[in-house]
Length: 232
Image (cartoon, rainbow, N blue to C red; front, side, top):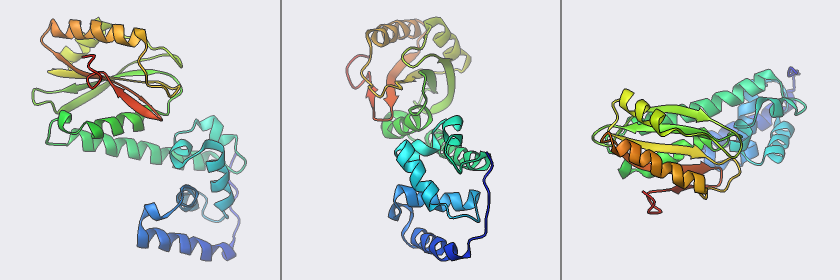
């Protein structure tokens, strides 16, 4: 589906008010639909996009849900075409990259700012519809040096292999590792399998003098830290 751009000069005054509200007061001054509307004026410059913005928020629930929605789900909405999907996915990717660069460039060890790590993990993984297992590598000063997506699975399972975790950690010259996976169901409570594999990975890494710093489970609604829970 392709957006149709029709001149609408009467809407220019409304757009100007949105721009001024944003520039004068910042993005927090705008409701989710207003922020989305402001952005959609760039992707669809000559159409009243307020109804579309409200429709998208009503359908998906929030600004974050909209930009992280599946392409096919977005395209199923009347008035949304490939240009709009492209524009929305740029926001999602830009937010993820900014979060990662801020995390990686920190001078302080990641253990001093776990909130930044959690924010990045939730931004990059929480809205996926299948489980994904990632490894975040730390150097001897516990600063982030790299990240690898190890496995992707189903909505409620992802296979984790201790040998592969160890090999990947050694290949990346890591002194410590943080395991991260998401729960698309929203419930971050670890399963028995999550607990068991964490123990096995911890033992495998310890055998080569690499620390398992944490195992974090994230979802749209929260997070769970094995270390905070006393399981590591």
